[in-house]
Amino acid sequence: MDTLAYLPAVELAKRIRSHQLSSVEITKTILARIDASQPTLNAFITVCHDEALAAARAADAALARGEDVGPLHGVPISVKDIINTAGIRTTWASRTMANNVPNADAIAVRRLKEAGAIILGKTTTSEFAHKLMTDAPLFGTTRNPWDLNYTSGGSSGGSAVAVAAGLGPLSLATDAGASTRLPAACTGIVGLKPTLGLIPHSQVPDGFNNFIHLGVMARTIADTALMLDILSGADSSDPHSLGTQRTQALAAIADMNSEALRGLRIGWRPLAGNTLLDDEVRHACEHAVEAFRALGCHVDLVDAPIENAEPAWRVLQQSNWAARFFDRIDELEPQLDPSFVEGIRAGGAYSGQQVTRATYKRTEHFRTVQGWFGSYDLVLTPTMSRPPLAADHGALEPITIGGEDAGDMRQSWVPYLNLFDLTGHPAISVPCGWSDKGLPIGLQIVGPWYADAMVLRAAAAFERVRPWADRVPVHAPEAIH
Image (cartoon, rainbow, N blue to C red):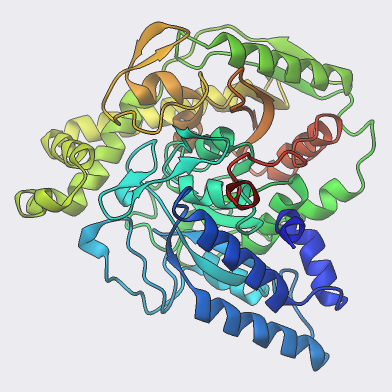
């Protein structure tokens, strides 16, 4: 039965529709795996045993009646615990929200349900998704299924671990500064941050200056494309979504052949405002770059320096936190993660001019990146500058890269990620290799606005020549037993 847990969502949906597999059967299997893995991996804050099984029984009954069904009918998935789910608590991994039960679904959750998906539960995140690790006072630490001593990344670490360890083939996440792509790279799965607004975000308080994206996590590119097709398209709650259409990404990758990428112009950027890159990461990514050359792409090494986006990102994000919490920080501090408190206090100290200048800098970053696509169709970067950190590494502690002091974690570990949150360009992390310690390494593929299908086509072509989904983490539930 455990082999079912690693079937792609596309295949699960097909088997459920053809009555080869029942939704109840696969839902029970995955719920049992979640329960078995919680003491070790800790990927979920809330597990919806009764609700998920009731939905699975209803899904099987609908098929028995011959009803028309959606593309994810009966397929169990998970949702990051900062995304609203009607009737299911949404804690933001915070003691201050431990009993919060929304009365309505986020638009993205509603679309997944309309497509037939079954919500297994809510996955772990750092408190209010504020850091690059996944631990919080409310639930403890989420660990990497490839090696429990290492982090799953953050802030969508629970979603990444769930997908990697066969605890549901898909997870809905978020990405404001790294939070989908970093955990995907740390756990050896796929993480897509689409073009800003392509998946409408109905919860952000500032729809106009927003850079918080909803993200897609899966083990395969086909599953990623299917989920994007379901989630994309305009909604009145998100001004960035207006005018967008539902993607046809799954169809775009279905008709590909070995010549699909021939002639594409690709810029390979090993640095993005950082100066240090781990040798193992560089070698794995350069090996991946050679695969794109073998697929017929024209790839150039681009070493022109660019400005690190983290300083502007920091002002904008910390100001966002302060706008929500600064006036109550003395009251809330005893309940909050100390690193979150520090970020809120920093945000409360910025002047209006500093925030506006950070907004100006965001526009500069956009224009810089947009200019790249005058010369290149796609850009490749590492996802992170070094393999995963230790699970107990402090969020405010400096890091090392290749034995050298690299300073601030966000500036030096993930400069490749917060840049594209600010600019809004679509970016996907795919597995491209392994460290000597057996930890995953990720490659990022970036495209122009609304070229999400082209990004997915490039990722699918790479997946065909360098497949990854057949590898199973050593600390998945079957190994735990």
